[in-house]
Image 1 (cartoon, one colour):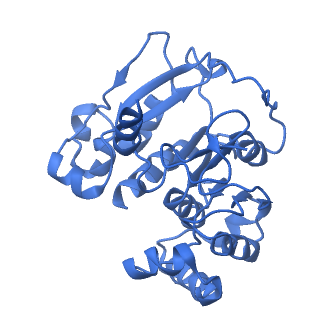
Image 2 (image 1 turned 60 degrees about the horizontal axis):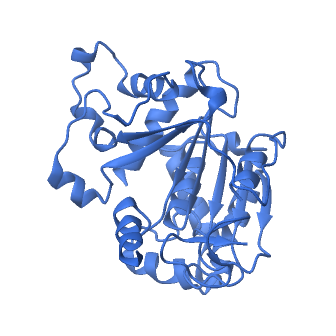
Image 3 (image 1 turned 60 degrees about the vertical axis):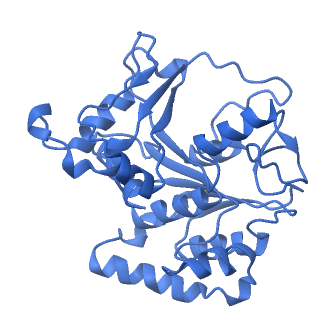
Length: 131
Length: 172
């Protein structure tokens, strides 16, 4: 259904993946630290030499690199653990760069949101229990 | 909630860069579906499409937890006041905290609910269609799958009819 949603959003010109075989992921998965998103007003934008922290992050996130990045710490992150817990916001999010969007090419962003009890903590915990 | 708004603002800044109107799209499942609908309706000048998977309609909870876990999950849908939800959005537009709804005209919106959903009932999810129709969105619905509360795929996940609490993915 991910295809159906994106194909509708992109004007019905996407290529349908195989229904029987898993789609190979030739792109790049990057884990990003999310706490910066919670308190963007606390980021020192002067130190980063930017007037708009959002466009700064967006530019950063839209650009895949040739390096094999595992964890991307967003510049300016202000981590306040107590605040994080009360927000219900997980510490990590994920960005996938399809192979066609690698090597510095900037692509559109689609953001997918999970629901209650579907975050990393709950899903990972349950998968471990089942093993 | 605030954190999600920050994400929107982050994405919003991308739209300034002469991008096509597919630049920022959003989707979500369950409460994430409610958030996707809210992001699209409130930030329609920068979000150009949304996918709402098994989520309740905009402002359904009206700020109360009782409605959020009551009518907005199990209905009955007839008790959810759609016109009141829409007028709340208009109030936000007038005060400048939401974008003018004219931006929603012809925006693609995909709405999914499975017939066996026991978490957010199908008739509740379908109210999204009423709201986005009001604003002239280009809607595609997917209401006929036997799925329970989950994201359906062609080749991965639990049995479609059963609630798969391991990962909320159902193999359709």
